[in-house]
Image (tube, rainbow, N blue to C red; front, top):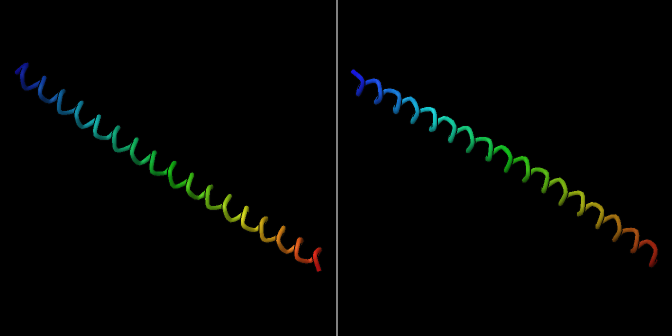
Length: 62
């Protein structure tokens, strides 16, 4: 009976660890996606700023 109990406790522990790993992986994916989105926004903003600067320069040189 003790062996059965030990086995089921180990099984539960294994299942819990799987869930923890899964949750951690999902969390990391969400963070990665958020980071990518932020980078995209930053890149787009930089592009806009560069375009505006270029337009400003062009209009000044005319």
